[in-house]
Image 1 (spheres, chains in turn cyan, red):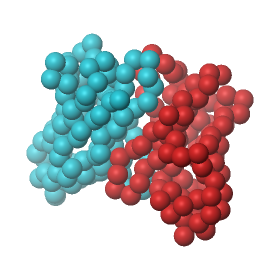
Image 2 (cartoon, rainbow over the protein chains, first blue to last red):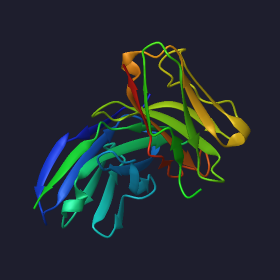
Image 3 (tube, each protein chain N blue to C red):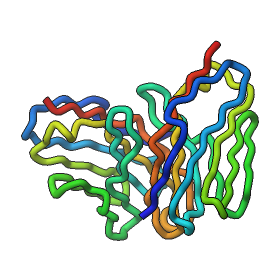
Image 4 (cartoon, rainbow over the protein chains, first blue to last red):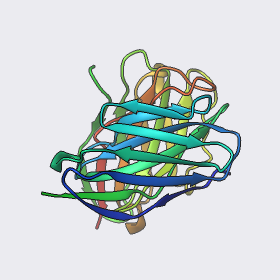
Length: 112
Length: 116
């Protein structure tokens, strides 16, 4: 089955700097990669996703890149703000198999 | 409704009791998922329903866990003879379509289950 590894487990960034979280996956047939943000005690919220037919996707301060050959994808947050502090999860899903496999999460702390 | 609704939000019960957790998906969403999130951990897939197809139960950790979905809408996750290791947040998610469509999954707030 699919295995998703996520690094780092914790990340502290000065406000205004950039944050990068990386994930690798094992199943080369995986073709959908969402990122979720989970604030303390809240539900996971989809913040961005990418499909395997593109290499990069941006939405304001958030971007995701995908390297299919290396089987890794990354979340980039620029100009970080205190409200970006949360746990971020990456996930992978393969066409025809609807089970999202999640990474173990990254606790991002933005230092004012 | 506007989003995925789960009830109860919190459940405390004694070891050995049975519990039922409810999920009401977004109206019109045909796919429904249950996940489990232990403290400080990622999300563990439990079961997946798509329309009238047989559910994918491959993530259920033991035969004490079962789930059903009535009328293609509301789902109930049942845990029988609860154990302390069942303590976790149980999250439900729904999406507009299922297999092959790769549609985003939208989560409910979860049920925090505590087994004493």
